[in-house]
Length: 227
Image (cartoon, rainbow, N blue to C red):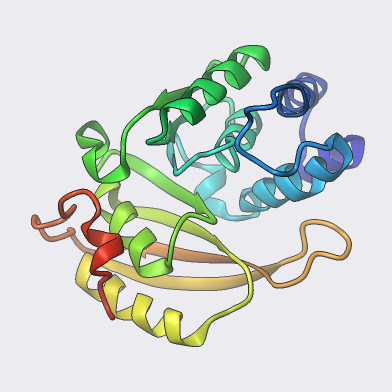
């Protein structure tokens, strides 16, 4: 954990908070992840999440939304690393929301709040976020449709991806055009030794998202844009 602190500039209190998150992950048999071993979770969850700190828009964000937060990554890790930012952990499944609340309480993460709803139905979040993040959530055109309405103009989407899929990237490019987004970069990352095929896909909101978005809940997955 100390090496993680050195790499990302985390102080003792922040490392203690991250330790508490991993302890809750290991303790709670209902935690929504298959990776509960603390040593492995440092790499798979924390290091992978904190790679986003290398992006300038993330460093300066004051309002961040983590879509499909699940076990809380990357959202909880970023909330610890960026105490001045307000982080919304958006998750539709009630049991996962309950876990997120327990983990935030155990780690005393006061700048994170759990939003227990679908991304398409989070009306309060429309146009209010500097950064939206998503990790292993859905096909990229679907993630773009979830994220675009929630971003302010000039805001940034960071989408965690594994091995690159050129066909899906082409579909995502068409979806981005329709949603007012523009691809800035696809950054290869190596958050820990032996990590392979890790990429951050970074989009900027360059135009107002058309008012027909977000579509009704479930529509993005059933009829993805760009396909």
